Image (cartoon, rainbow, N blue to C red):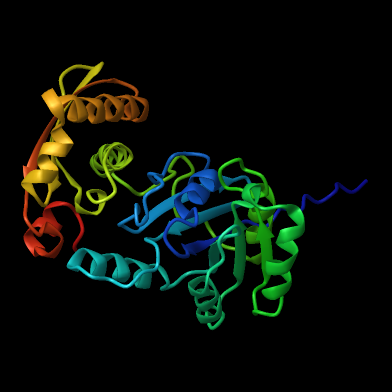
Length: 301
């Protein structure tokens, strides 16, 4: 009597870049794919500034996603850093996700779709925010891009998760067989300090007026364990003008207090401990063009 042989399922792995215009939902898509909050998300354009890695671990695959800032024309040294982050994220990848907002497909989107067709890797075109589009209206972009040279077109809603599983299966089918690059307990390469700074910036972006957000940066001065249950965090919020500082602090400190309260809630959820968060607002004129300030905030190589 002969025993049956066990067929081992191949393991697939690879690096996948996520690109597109600002505000098409790349960071929301990353968070939805990984199942964890990896990138901050706000309605403000160019919320993402750094290259961010999110890791999805499955029984038969490890998908390493690289989120990038929105494709734009850089106007400052910070913008140049963001543009370089996009270029770096395109090197050595195994697959590419090009993300469009299905409700607002513009000429720049079409240019990106055309430019990326030259990439010699599997490419998937993601039509995001389908919850904002009547199903019949999706037929046109699907038809328009059918001959664009992509391996698949996947309509989905990153916010609700509709279509996410379809995208995961499509990606796995195009990734090579290979080892896991990261431990299966790891879901991002960001440090706690980086994540805390981003959570504070996220709440500032939500709270502040339109003209201020791009001039906001967050510097973590210190993170100290005060006990097993308590972490003390001191941080500076950078802005570029005295007038902006007054707005961030608000009347009787109410705006800064609100930013601090909501930031603390997010940080406590991340760290699983109580947080004593102290925030200060510092004016750094033209910090987005100042190499020393950019290095302080982590926006330099």
